[in-house]
Structure formats: C-alpha cells, structure tokens
Length: 464
Image (cartoon, rainbow, N blue to C red; front, side):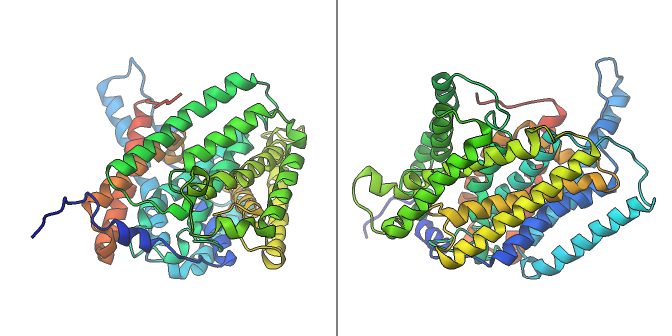
C-alpha cells in the first residue's frame, strides 16, 4: 500500500466545512450579546475592591515582605476578574448561550439595582473622579478584545453555537463584528479624530509596514502548517492585517478634517452600496474564483471601500463624542457623552433595520452599508453602557483592563498562537462538552494571567 505524508492538520477540510455556509443569528440576539458583555465589566466594577492601584505598591526600597503581599494581592485581584469576567464570558458563549436573553435581563436588573443603591446612599461609599475619555474607550477596547480572543478558539468546538460564527454571505453572526469593531474603536481615538497633524508619506509607510509584515507572516505560517483557512472570509491570500494596512495607508494619504470625514465616508459608502446592488455583490458573494490575484482575493480587496468608509465615519463620531468642546471628564459631561452615544447608536440601528429590509441584507463578506451601520450601532451601544460606570458604586477599573491595555496587540497575537497550538493538540471537532469547556477555561486562564504577569512586571511588548 502506498504511504502518504501525514498532514499536520488531517481534519483541515472538515474544520473548514464546520465554519462554512452559516447564516448567523437575529439582530435582537446580537443586541443582547453586545449588552451582556459590557454589563459583566460593570458588575465586576461594582464590587469596588482589590484594585491594583490600591494593593500594588512595589518600590525599590520596599522590603521583601511588602513585595510578597503586593504580588499576592495583585494575583487575588486578577483571580476575581477571572471568576467574574472571563469564566462568565466563556459560559455565555457556549453552554449558556441558549439562555442569552434571560442572562441579559438578570444582569441589567443587577446593574439597575446597583445604580439605585448608589443613588439612595447604599453600597460602597468609595468616591472617585469620573473615568477619563481614554479609560472609557480603553475599557470598551478591552471588552471587544476579550470577546474576540475567546471566540477565535471557541468557534472550533461544537459547544460554540453555529449561529455565532461568521456568516457565509448574508446575515449577522457574532464573529462578524471582530474586524469591524477593531476598525471603529481605533477610529474613535485616532489622530484624525483628535485633529492632530502628521506627515503623510512618512506616517503612511510607518503605520502600514508592520501590518503588512504581520499579514505576510500569517500567510506563511498558515501555509507552512497546513492550517485551515476559510477563503470566503477575506479571500485566498488576504487577511485582517492587510485590511488594516490599507485603511491606515488611505487615511494617512487623504487628510480630511475630523468634522467632515464622516461626510466623505458616507459618500464612499453610499457609492459602494450602489455598486453592490447593481451587481457587484453577485461577483463578491460567488464561490467562483479566477486565477488572477484580484479574483483570488476579491472579498478582501473590495471590502476596503466599506471598511475605509466605516473608519472615516468613526473618526467624525469619535471627534464629536470625545474630542469636541463639549467633551470632558466631569460627571455632567460624561452623562452628556453617554446620552449622545446612546442616541447615535439608536439612529444607526434604525438605519441598519431599514436598509437591511429594503435595500440589501447585512453582509460582512462585502462590508456593505447595513454592515457598517450595524457595527457602528453595536459599538456605540457598548460605549454607552461602559459610560454608565460613573453612575454605579465602586467604579474602579478592573485589573484585567489595565493588564490588557498595556499589551493589546501582543495579547491578540498570543491568542492566535494559542488557538493554533490547541487546534493541533486537541481534536476540537470531536471533543466532548466537558473536554471543550475545560480547554476553553484553561485558555481563558492563560489569557488572564499571562497578560497580568506582564502588567505586574511592567513589561510592554512593542512592535513599532
């Protein structure tokens, strides 16, 4: 009998089929998920104890005994975050997913009770200045990063509902929001949103080169180990890093004031949507591919129009919410910003529903108009919820938020490496519920304490 070389990934085709031809879930469930996730952070904050700034006081002249107590206190704080944030995250995305509406309602009521307790003088008496703009957006970035890191591994197990995975053509899956949310969150706090000047070509080269290198590294690594790649996501060779590099390059070259960037973004988006409904969508959503580089990577190349317009709109929204004259860190101003974010979220939700019903359904694959407005709506919804923290007792930032903020990109790359490693060590497709859940908890544990260790030691991993 002829012998064939054993593949590093014998179930590659099965794994690709496992995440193919999916249609997503309802927008109502998407709204519930994007509500429950920031609510977990609010519940953790409402505990109001074991904050790193209070318990970690390491100095050069501290004796060994004080240092040991600080380490133990930091680990205790991180353990609380693991139990109140990471573990519930894993459970809500897997075995508790069918009760998402119930858990969202319960957590919402808990936050409402915490708000009432503070208003009537019960609960924590801890007083603290309102979170700065940077802390507010950082919290939302951390929320989305944790969600993304957990989903990229969970999707390979059967305990992760198929309706949450990325959709094939049209529809709304939870994982469809990963790259879009990353684009929007970065646009909110970008140099453009803050109206900071820069040198076009120098900035363009500096910002895109590392992303291109990471994109090429991903191509080589996935091909080298025969890792599963779903071509309908970006194309045969394209990936997330190339999309981010394209957005960064275009934004650096075309210098548009923040107050008008949304107008340019809207014009590009409407024009692109018109092109889609005139027939481009049939080409992009078809599984037929030619041999040329454009056909091989049609989804990634053409979706740049949608992602760039999303970024430009996000720049103006970020400037309006956080960097215009009305924005500051006072309680009244934070309340005004929260209300503005909530109103904008509602408006984008309405646009999404109208366009989805009467023009074209949401499609992450083509990054069409309703997808762009839906990503903006859900992220503004999450920001508005995070901004509620100033109205709750014990509004301290959690330990895990500070740990993630120190090394956000490094943690994302770590999550990708761990996901690949686990896929080679564990037969994810045929893992039992108990085994899959155990692996996910262990994975969440590593994504809690490795960043925590780096943060405690003051290590910041820089790529450029």
